[in-house]
Image 1 (spheres, rainbow, N blue to C red):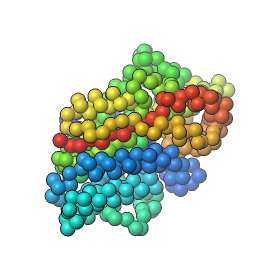
Image 2: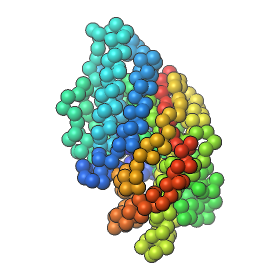
Image 3: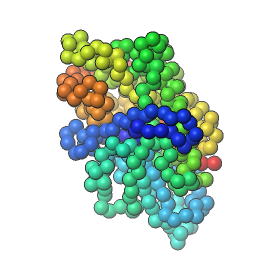
Image 4: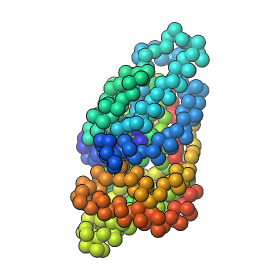
Length: 373
């Protein structure tokens, strides 16, 4: 959970679409000092902040009486390497158990099976080596992109995805075309970029979420639910005014500084773009309604991310960012720049802390509880 991406090289076949090239963006595996395992407190706290909302969605909207199959099947889409996914899955299992008891169905309490999904490059060895010994479910791994089908039709009762869907299946192609108005020279994201760049990001997100929802609609049983936690922007707030937008600008500025000093090639920066996008509630609502297979049981912005980012010093924020971004950066620039890049980023984080302070109102995450019609 809280993993970027859940994507891999593959073909989108489930929706009778043309083949689409996808990219994979794994988190740092293992249990070392720069691993996602040891640098994912931000995502854990963001998920914890929504725990009550998840429990309320299950208690109020999940109709377990309409489920006849045993076991009860759950899936975490974009689980990464733990430990966040284990905590979330345990809370969800306990909430479903309480729902059965509240409905007077103690004698029909099912067993639980949890599918941990992430792309094939994910460190599943670390994930399963750290599985809790005391758990109330049977565990299995499902490697593959969540931008495609993962499960048999009508086989899953509850799906969860935390801080994963904001990763795009690929960088928008227009950003890499020097003749396009969306050529993103000197920047690595849509923050502080021309409208054409932002539009390209938004269009790619729309495309990816359409495929995601179509796949989930086939896999969920009628009455099943999916809960999404996604970094988001309030309606009308540009990415440059969010804490993470400022962070991406600082990372891009660090790369440009290195290019100016001849440590990397400026053309490499011009051709590098982070495949992440923060949607607005309005945009996400439109996508769900356009799909037509789900009712929106609850959708709202919660827990400003600034409350979390403010707790980081420059080095801590750099470690968090490195755990998630090192793979994609090293693939493009080479691993030799990583230490220098994040050292520079940490210093810029301190130097431009006033920008983070002024970006507070733009930071949020979107909670969405959707039920399969």
